[in-house]
Structure formats: C-alpha cells, structure tokens
Image 1 (cartoon, rainbow, N blue to C red):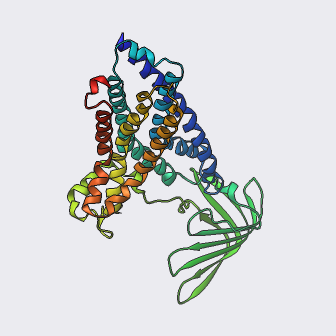
Image 2: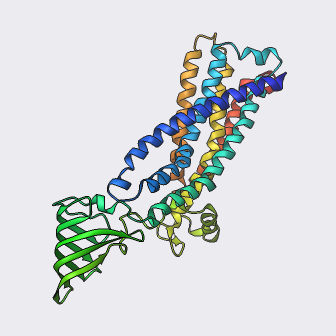
Length: 376
C-alpha cells in the first residue's frame, strides 16, 4: 500500500513538472526565437539554419529553468495534498514524516542526474552544434538583404551600395568597398550588373566600371567593360570563436586537473585553438557540477510544509516563508560561484554549501523531533 501511495505522489510531481516544463520552456523559447530573427533578416542565413539554431537552444533553456520548475512542482503538489487533506493518507497508513522527507530526497536525486546530464554533456554539445550551423552556413538570403540607396554591411569586410535593384537580380549604380587587410582596400564602381547564384554561391556580373586598389603608399585604377565579382569568399558577421559554455566538459576538467594551482590566476589561459582563462573555466565547472546539487536542497525545503498541519493558525505564513526560502536558495545557487574567486576558505564553503545545507536541514529535523526522527 505504501508503495502505491508514494507512486501516486511521484507521478503527480512528475506530471506537474512535465506540463510546467513544456509550457514555460516553450514560452521562453518563442520569445528568444523572435529575438533571433536577425539571423535571417540581417545576417542572411536561411530559414532552415534559423530553425535548427533555435531548436538546439531548447536544452539550454530547459536546463536553466529546471531547478525552478522542480521546486515549484514539489511545493505545489505538497501544498495541494495539504489543502485537500490528501496528506492524511500517508499518516493514516503508518508512513512517518521522516519517510516522506527521505522519499523526496531520493526522488530529487533523479532530477539531479537529469540536470547533470544536461549541464555536463547535452547543453555544451547542442550549443556547439547550434553555433556550428551558423558558422558553416552560407549567406542564403544575400540578394534579399540589399536595399536601394542604402549601404549594406551584411558580410565582414564588405560594404555594398546600389542605386536601383530589382527582384531578378539586376542592379544599377553599384559601389563595392572590400577591405583586403589592415592597409589595403579595394573599391569597385560599376554602371550596372546582375547578381546570380551558381553552385550555391553568389556572384555579381559587373558592367562598365572601374577598380581602385588603395594601399598605405599608393593607389591605382583599372577600368573594365565586364567583370565578375565573387561573393562566396566572404563570411557573415556570425561569431566564429566558440564560447566557454559550448566547450566539452572533459576538456575543461583536464585543464583544471593539469593546472589546478593556477585556477584563480586572472591571466592564465588553457587551450590552443580556443583558449580560455583558467579562472573562467573553474567557474564554468562549478556551474555544471555544483549548481545542480541545489535541486536536493530545494526538494527538502519543500517538505517543510508537512511539518505543520494546515489547521494551525500560521500555516499560511509557513507556506509563504517556505516559498521565499526556496527562492532565496535559487538565487544563492546562481551567485555562490563568485565565492571561489576569493580565499581558500570561501572557496571550500562555496563548493560544499549545498551539502552543508542538506546536513543542516536534517539537524533541524533532529531538534524538531527531540533527537528521535522516528517520532517526527
């Protein structure tokens, strides 16, 4: 019978968690997806690349929201059980409050494993893949990003200006400025031309114009009747370097293990192709490994609701205080990594804080039960 009761509790929490996760994650994802429309409208990437990029952001969004949704789920279900007197089913079947609390502790471990899987492996991988799609994709909408009588800087090191432009790719009054290097610039002026696509690459066929090459010391002109300008050699303004949250966790752990004595050095870097400050790597590892442990703390905090009957006059205050404590712990979990920058003592406190909070909660239960948890 007890197994059936706990199974119903776990399913109620799980269903509420799933429905809340889907709803809140999709809302945040839609808002973020709208903000990322610049990928198409300004950077010239295709709808396919845009959709893949935004979809691969879903694990990151869910990972950020998981700890909050988990706390809300357990808090809501326990409160619902209290309000509907369903919680009495546990006590009338001989289930002790400490058994209920220990069940929530074990149940929280499942969500801890989910969060660790996300932060350690899934999110870094999907973030890396999403950025790769942008980095390696062509500028598919390039012709549609040109506007008449406006300078266009869609791609890096290239400025375009056209007097007239139609949807067939015919252009008139063309000005092209290409920055070759720090000291050398090429300017092309043409009366007319046409943009066309060949083998998924864009070209401009230019008619009646001139090319001016300018470097630090001299400049020379070259007139032409017809020439072809290759746009495929240019890349969009999309970021090329990977960020720390896109880096494989194993690489970060190797850096910390190899240079553990330099972990607080504000200038020491690790990595060759993509190097990062070791201090930042240490903070990132903290966020990926230590931060998820707060899930267990929040699960236990929610069980404060069962320590007092709803018939008590101050039960409403208990609910309010429990929610505020949970919210403050979420804030603490987000900020605690800053402590590792300081002394060894503050670093140890920051790393062990979630475990200390769990221990303190059980010490509180000991005092609450007069050091006899069986009678809690």
